[in-house]
Structures are given as C-alpha cells and as structure tokens.
Amino acid sequence: MYISNFGSKELNPLNKEGKGYILEFKNGQTKVLIPADGKLNAPKGMCVTNNHLFIADVGAIIVYNLADITKSQKITFPKDESYVNDIAVSGNTIYVSVTNTGNIYKLDVTSPDKISSRPVLFAKVPGANGLAIADSVMYVASYPVDGNTAAANVIYTIKNFKAPIVSKLFNRMGQYDGLALSDDHKTLYFTTWVNGGVGSVTLSDTAVQMIPMPIKLSGPADLTYHNGKLYIPDLPNSRVLIHKTK
Image (spheres, rainbow, N blue to C red):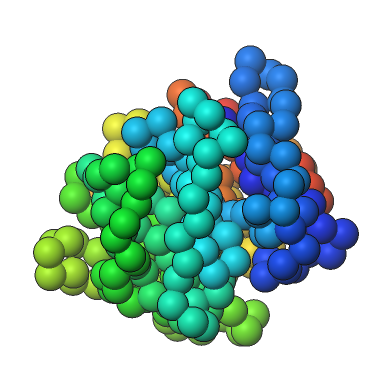
C-alpha cells in the first residue's frame, strides 16, 4: 500500500513547498518509496496501473514508473484546476477529481511511460473528491470546499461513461472524502469530516450504517479496502488506522 504525505508543517492541501513524499507499507513495515525531492507538493489520491503510480497533486498529476522511480512525468491541468484530489482507473483510462471546480477529467494512459494526451473534461459533481469505479459505475464523494455542508454534498453515481449520467446515490448530506468498494462490490465504504465519521452503504438498497471506530478521528481521508480491512488515514493527526470489517 502506498501512503501520500504532504511533508509540510501546516495542513494545507494546496501548498507548493515541494516537501511531499510517498511511503510504501508492506508486511507491517513502512519505508520511503519516493523521497521529498521537490517534485511533489501536497500529494493526495493515487492509483496504480501498468506498473506506474499516478499521484494527484496541486494542479497536476505526477506519474512514477515503479520499476524505476527516477523516471517521472508531470501532467498539468488547466488554469484554476488547483485542488486535484483523487484518481480512479478503468481499463487504460484514469479519472481525476478536482474539488475546487467539481470537474472530473479523464486521461488516456495506454502508454504510461510517455503520456502525450491531455486531461479531457468528463463530468461535473459539486466538490468532487474521492472516486471509486466498479461494474461500469463511478462513485463520487462530494466535499464542500467552503466547509458549509449543503444538500449537494452527498455521494453520486455516474453511469454510461460515453455519455455520463450523474445521479445522487442518496440524499444524506456530509463532507465526504474517501470512497472504497468491498471485494464483492456490494458495499461502498466512505469517510466524512462531519464528526470524523466512517460508514458503509449497501448498494442494493442504499442503506447507510456508520461504523464505530476504536479511536476518535478528526479528518478521515482517502481510505482503502483490502482483504476485509479498511485503511483509514486520519489526515490532521498524521496516522493511518487499520480496521477489520469482518
């Protein structure tokens, strides 16, 4: 598992200090995979495809070849698309959320060593944050950039990727951040900054259940699900909670 870190003293997701770095967590041990060498500012969501690590950063995506991390590329986004936040992959296409504009972009990564295409606007969701894709459906978490939770801040689905159809999964308001699907794709897990909550949605009937945590979380962010466990970053407290779901 890869863990992104701002490396800055203040919790500023748009900082440009160049202190960002990536940790690798394996067999219960962590080590630095990508050091703070000035290429990363405030790295957030990530995905791996074709042995390349795609990292959402301020106004850009940074791509590293996992076979040789000295090789990297920077893909910049249009002006004002600063809060590049999360990435999900489907086939040879990655989808990228930009929270400050709510835009979701798509990018062809068929040749990850040399990406010549540019990000193309795919859809728009208010405060688009965490992304997850399964069974030809994209799930999008909505986070209020100004901190004021509104009716638009829910979890959305996007179907028909050729002509995207955006719908609300439910009407439960929140400050949704991370999304992760269970192995069988029947349950969607989410984090929300409202009361530091972690919850689940049964996709067959959209029933929501909050999951009690053994410790208080102040800012649960972009979580991951693997082999019956949730890996939940508590961003303000610089820690990751591992929680068994079964």
